[in-house]
Length: 106
Image (cartoon, rainbow, N blue to C red; front, side, top):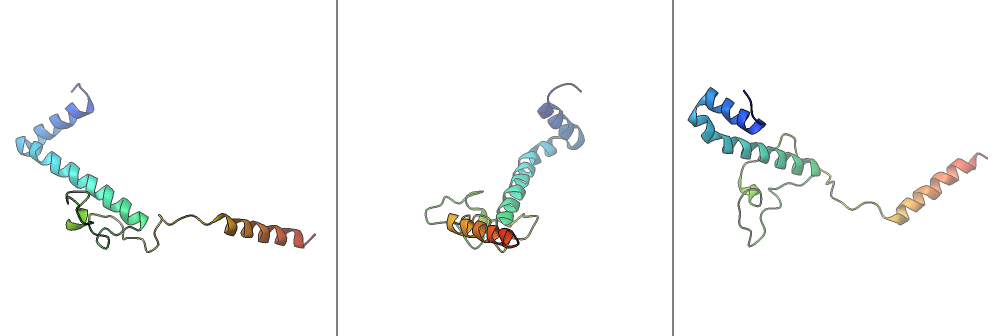
């Protein structure tokens, strides 16, 4: 079978499942996208159910994803990864503390 990936993919689906299989392709790909989106949000510690849609949101996937079931493959992290990095003053205090402990033995 010659052709690009898309042609081979749809030919395989059509030969294996017929026309009904072609009708399910959009639902399967949207489900795969939602799995990736929900898993990424859970990894970052963002629970889409506690931070529901804001007022005026149109409410489709993914902006209204909180109205759909979660397809996340992992639980939501308790600590969010989107928090701001440590300030430069705390970094400099760590550096000064570590340099003191290194030079202490000299």
